[in-house]
Image (cartoon, rainbow, N blue to C red; front, side, top):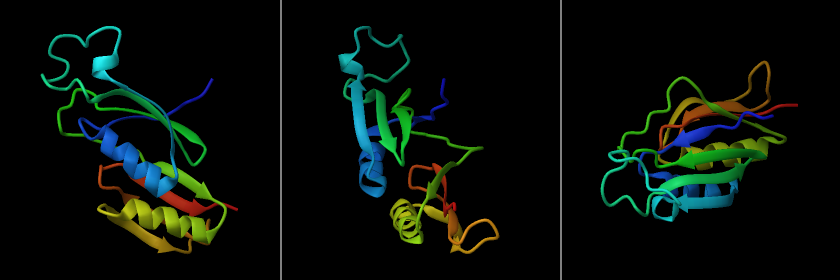
Length: 137
C-alpha cells in the first residue's frame, strides 16, 4: 500500500510535466490522452477540443511517483492546503531544485539554515504547487 500525490493541472499538465522533467530530473512513466481512452469521458466533463489533453500521467520525481491529469480542463488549477516536500542529501541539491522550481513561481521562505536543516526553503511553483525543499540529515 502507498500514498501517491495526484495533481490536476486543469489544462497545463503537459507543460507541468516538462517543467518537472527539467527542474527535478523527473522520469515520465506514461501519458494517456483523452483521445486514447478506451471509453470517452462522461458528457460535459471536459470541453470540446480536449482530445489531446492529458487524461492520466505518471512520473517519478525525487524517488516518488506523482500522478497528474488535466482534469476537467477548467484552466483554474488549485493546490491549497498542502506542499510536496523534497528531502535532499546535499545543500547543492537543495539549491539546484529550489532555484529550478522557483522559476516563474513565488518564494515563501528563502533558502537558509533552520534548527532542523542546514539548508531549507519553501516556494510555490508557477503552477501553484507548494514545495518544501531541504537537506535532511
